[in-house]
Length: 93
View 1 (cartoon, rainbow, N blue to C red):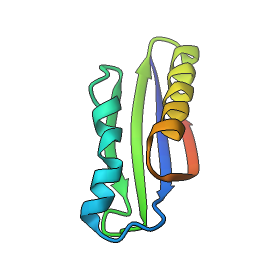
View 2: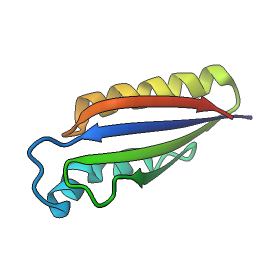
View 3: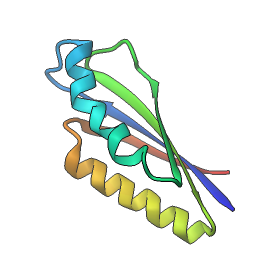
């Protein structure tokens, strides 16, 4: 079994409240949290309006499978989340 920890840092320009931030970022958990091989949580910048950090734990039978899933997640986030991705870190455990 292979495990990757994918941490993404976001900038939310023009976001004026925590309520707006949650509305803009809520899709992240809904999109990926239902996948059996992915766990999702907001891991940082919880009290800031203009930034957010999310961590996803991705599990698969092969490193290739995990890398592919991480790439798919990154691509989908770039296309669908109403925020600017500032940093992406991948760590294999």
